[in-house]
Length: 412
Length: 150
Image (cartoon, rainbow over all chains, first blue to last red; front, side, top):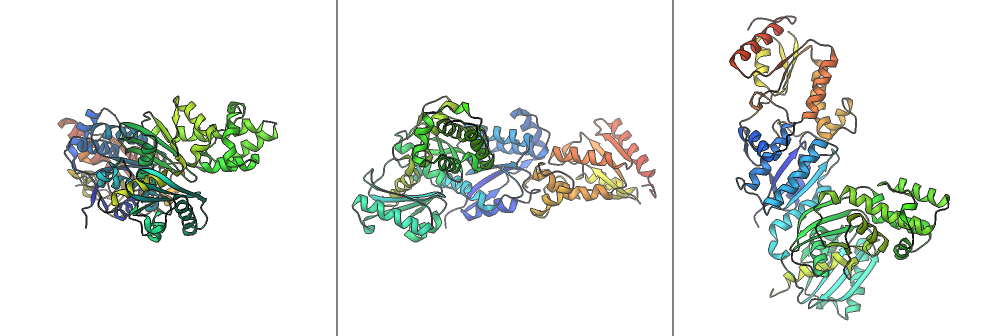
């Protein structure tokens, strides 16, 4: 059995929130163990003075001292989990500053989270899995070229995608709305194989990702079952032709959004948030339905409108829809409403998530929503940069999985 | 014998002083260790479940962080039970400290609102202040119902 990945926990409030067990369980389920860096009480104030952030809570001071001990190399760890109570402003400041400080001064991957008493191991699982992968599989993540014949399947909350790759080229794709998880996966795999002119036996390695990754991974006998933060990062920089240096990957999904700061194709800091449906692809789907257009037509429609003509800015899908209905009732054009919806989603992601990662250019948008050009435009406006949408961006998870799966091709 | 809430609740020195004067200390019964190997400075010995933050809703609204509510689920009932309180502010970590400053503010406010007799002292920094500090606590505790000499 491989050695456990050691994750240092820097936190304030998990035990009194009743979620410490959930943190242990999430780490345990991905072959990691959480530990608390051993610190002398006498060293805490000294470390806080050196860090320069004057906070009142003793546990936040302890977090800072532990973070500095990790950076100074006094404590060994493979990764860092930073967690504080949701809605605590003092803790949020410390959490953000440590999340920035640790990767800047060390090679330790960091994931941070603000929890409530409702946080479960399931919520933390993808983050812990990504953290563990980055720590454990640096060699695998360093892969820049696909070799042999591999397939990637992404079982997402809204859609299921498959990609067949051969000798560093995409030779087959499949895309279906997710209904029954295995049946949807079987359909997209059949489509991708047919397009590639291949049969299942030709495939040398399979990688799966997305919410249904474990189920379909078992179904297909996949060599690699991997969360989407890692594969999306790899897929994005691979397709954008930017495997070296810094990049930021944004994926606005049907159920959650990911913002990942990538260095040399490996995720550094990342956030993964559900926020609320008003900030997801789901809201754009609803908008398209209400406007009577296909989701593929929403982007071009939005590009013809002026978003600022319609007040719409809510992370709640119900309030967002209310604004949408009110705007249409008041006589706003469909184009303006479509543009406002795109801007609203981009703004929620910008305000709620992108503040938590260091935005480094190029900014690469991936996932199905990256095909909605109005959304990409709105994000570019907010970030004041040109957003890159690589080819096959809607297949990003499948491409990243197929790329990484080639590390499992025999002889590799 | 009076039930005396102590703040910091983790102060074994305060707990001992209260007990010596014949009263019942209400605190966390946790000592602050020289080396911290747990999640926080005042980590509870047993796992708290997500039910505690929900019970804490009696003392703090839902928008208050879960860690504060979880702590209040423990300290709130003790504050309700308390007949007196000794509060030491600006204490050295080693004297006793609590992990969350927001909970501290709520605990102190709740104690002050309760109308019970309270002795509030600053943590002493010199020998003379230390002598006066202990004398003040002794006088306060002796004045409580059924208090005795140490």
